[in-house]
Image (cartoon, one colour):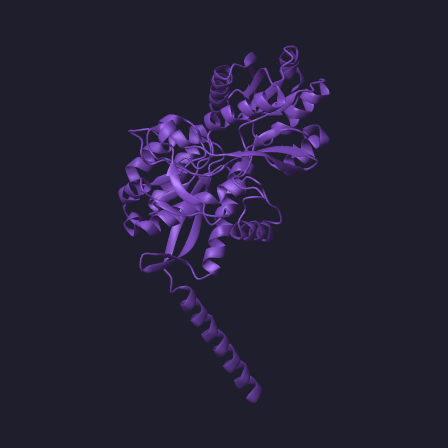
Length: 395
């Protein structure tokens, strides 16, 4: 009988502890931030990096007691939706966010998806942070989209100029998938290359995204003997295949892209043939990474068992949203208040050493501040990992 009473008492104590723990956790109201992007298929690495970055940072914030905005401290919940790189699903994802009362969404990751969700975002009062490059998303009268990274028409000229000045590149060829995103990036790259005085020897070769043998695609390009081969808008899944085919065809020049890549995918798909491949990297390098950035990388790696360099950029969107809301708490329910705050917003950048600031840029490219300020880090792949080639800034 005593043992039975003891067991009942223990169970009651455990239940009480559980209730108290739940009550303690529930003390903070929840602020939901959405993610709509691609986490499956050939471009999955882009969206997975987004989602994991948000989840790792939110978990860290909640563990530390929440995020204070005005007089209220919130626990952060990430609500995710895989749009499968399908504009129709992206619209469905944004409608889901609206139904849940979410006003701030990270993504989509591609041009078609970002353009498709614009009417929903503007009608439902949602600010969204795409990783897509069409200027019309960020120029007036558009007002609800904020570019979450450096665009190809900003990074391309910087890369080509560096290779022209430092590596003696004089001619360039472009290859792109037969989709709107890569084709748009190719056209921007061609324009940038010509403006720098580079000779464009090929700019009309395309491929289908499900291509498995790239030899027939690249053979006519190789005949033009460019100093630089640009893989416009290439997905992480296609990049190693294209690199391998180019090298096996005897190409010894430089290969670059303005899209972020995954070192693990390059290593597994192309091995040493990918050495020297140049791509846009995450917005951090060991030289500029703060202790908070190092802690973020550790937490991300502990949570998911690996780290994607692109998350050095993807960590920023959530941070910008929360810091801007902190600057003007009215933005929690009213995105027009958020938009007004963007023009003068400035806060310490927790992920960079020194006195770096978070601020909105884009006046030069879009005529209004609709881009977050992240460093332009350009990487070169070497022996299984990325090394920093150079770092720049955009306005």
